Image (cartoon, rainbow, N blue to C red; front, side, top):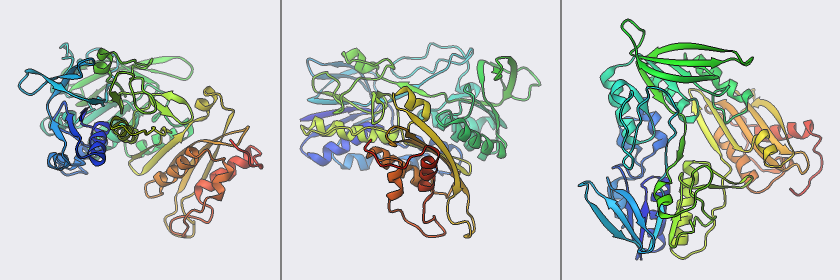
Length: 483
């Protein structure tokens, strides 16, 4: 059998590796649009900050490592069309010539594309499948997107060649925050602009404010409720090579226009699913443009599966949604490969568990926030707790702020958000909540978990349990019920 995986990132490589593990007799070809298969895109901000010495260190595995498993890598090769009936894939390789690649089973893992906001003067970035239309400011002017290793190289060249002193980061999600830290670490004065009312809008405002305070403490100027309207080259004598025209909307509804200047502008405002190849082949897309798949990662097209950021996500609390995450993509790719090889494996679902480090602060979440739970039909309530990460008598204790969301009808744990200092095991603690939600535990049942304790690292009642006890006190949860 010949299995073809389209995409060389998390889902595509995970699928290829799993197929080779399960059946070494299966021929596996991975079609990669660029020359960077199995690279950690999530690690790019740490490379740009200078913390990671060389870009090649971002490779999870080298070309040789991947090929040693028996898979065939087709790098710098674009998949342009699928003939579903004939089981043939049309490729355009480095020479530019089209060729046909037959397959028995296929896994589409084309990932996502940058979600570029409608900013006047911003160049159309284009891509290998859809060339840029031309016009506007781009990398040669110091205006960058960040989504790929090619983008990382372009930004690094800009940092080295232009020697910018100031930067504006448009977007304050996970990558935007990491890049604000990275550029500050490199010595640039950074302004961060976010359309939403807070940085890190995936957290409740009370916790987003803690992240904003950390940015401010490290010199990042934060402008929320601000929409960028236009980018232009700054005039002579301006305090920066680029001009950013923006409008801030105050809470009372009034607005103020202003112009900020910087030597470098980075646009990181999210992503959208790259489902074009699948759609052209006849696959169904959901309202977000993601490929509709079953929990076995089936597309509905014969012998074609899909996985990763290009597909919709089964969420354990919400049902079907779209939630692009590297951890999810790895799991979906593995599931797709097992089913392509004739096994029966179901993707167990995501909870949207995420964590980010911003300077010395770590923020994390899993499950649902209160408004998300309400929209999904639950009857939620939320409590907030601040407690030390370990016994206060041992030096170095820092508070962790935790917000717990649970069902007032069943006491089922629905979500958790945490912000604490680096070294406070925020990631470990959000994983405890994620495990509890995955297994339908009640808030009270978290108190029964046998968690590790020693004074330098925790307390007899861990912070996750203290937060659960606060929720129970606040919402009169004393009984144990089945969710």
